[in-house]
Length: 196
Image 1 (cartoon, helix red, strand yellow):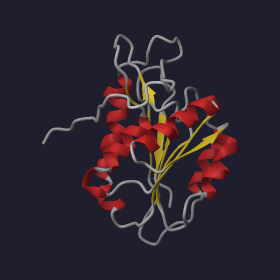
Image 2 (cartoon, rainbow, N blue to C red):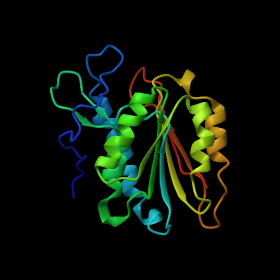
Image 3 (tube, rainbow, N blue to C red):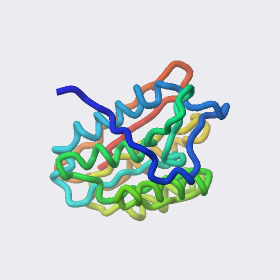
Image 4 (spheres, one colour):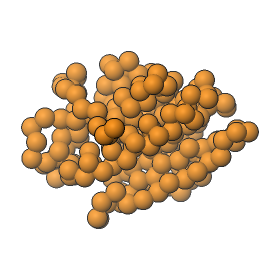
């Protein structure tokens, strides 16, 4: 069985898209590596998710929910949309998608795109260090949580954000693994965690 990353037409093309820092499109490694790793992680944890009534996806650096790869004319789903679509497999979808971005318009666009796909998306505009407490207040104590943290630059990811997410109450049957890695040469990296 071969893996296939979800890809669809943008149902909301009037909303902003991510074009990268230079405005020429994001690197090909975003869908080929980063979003593929995220999708495989979401699919690979489906058996853990099915044990919980509440399954929460958190992305405090969500962007607008749609990317355009350099050299392409089409757009692709952003990270939150990839996670949502891959969570739908086997009917074990996230019960809540909490997304935030420093830019309020980008956070709103991501949440609107999620809701347009049938996801329970909620936007939290502002810096991650200030919105993390609001997000934590929305996570049920008995939930399984996947936090996907992918800032443009590590200066935007305060250790306090990671520390607060790691303090989610532990559940009797679940540990709190942390997976971190560099997604591409020169990229600041990404961190995924399942608190609790």
